[in-house]
Length: 194
Image (cartoon, rainbow, N blue to C red; front, side, top):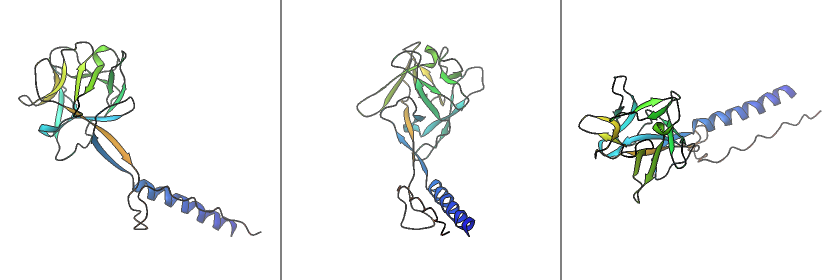
């Protein structure tokens, strides 16, 4: 009997943990600031395009994929401190950083340096300007004429950053009306009557 009660208690704890995991949601919200540790998506809201990878052609650039209402995080970037004070580096899922080399390029590179570091400022409306630290005339933008994300000295289409927001909550599918982000109660430890 003692083992059965222990099994029931462990099963209850497991069920609560699984239910809570099912209630976890991921959303993307337009960023008005960033900090090291943030997970972001690079998008062009006005064209409904988000970064989905880097080209494999000899001239490297960011590939865009369409989205409808909010980005899906097709190519997530983790924000890190850049190589110089006041800059950021964007670490890709392949472990490399977004990188400007020359011309209108956008590539990735494993070494964190001025080419993989970016000065990011936000205006009063929350729109970012993302400028390469090695050459501050190179601004990360969307080119609608040759659809791609790349670094330009001329005016193209502005980009935005969206932050990944994870939340727990929602309704417990096993107990409708419960949940909503509350921490599950710990099950009582069974007492062995003797």
